[in-house]
Length: 230
Image (tube, rainbow, N blue to C red; front, side, top):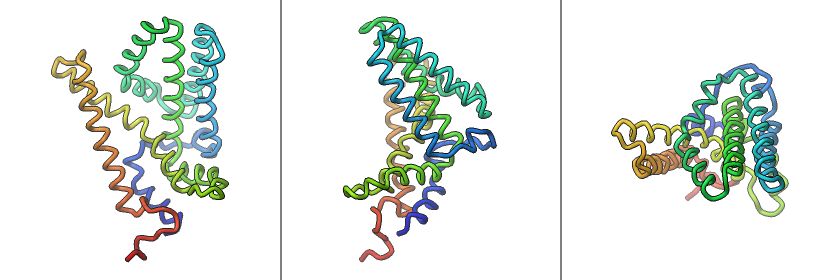
């Protein structure tokens, strides 16, 4: 099965993999490869900042990263409510993580960790909101093409990477739904009432994505055509 066919199949599965916000902004027009490099850069900046700097400077630098990412997203036409929704969907996780970091590492380190997480979350959301999934898939496949020499299939790398990135807002939304359902039952402070349904629905979503890809032949490795099997 040719990669172009796989790409078309993934396009039909895209609604399961992430939400696209149509537009004509500079970020929508930017190349998928450039946006992926920027996303990787945000992740590297977050890790290196927390590793190299003391907690207070790290928190300030990462707060600046969040501001830059938010500014880029807003200038591309994404609404403030969209970015706020990303935070609301992970509010319980952010609060729990922040509390643990305050207890174990102190307030400054907690601020650095949360700022880095928010920056990465917003960056991933901006990429998936302004880039169709098949376009992301093509960009990652092209970047991974040199790995073919060592036996790595670029198409499989692209598929794994794209599903992972596009799944961030989906999982965040599932967590928000679980939190709202728990709150409706008066169990918003019960971790199990939030986490257990969220985990179950995340696994169900992963299975749905897997079935959608398998139905379109995307689970087969490069060069394998299910129509020629048997």
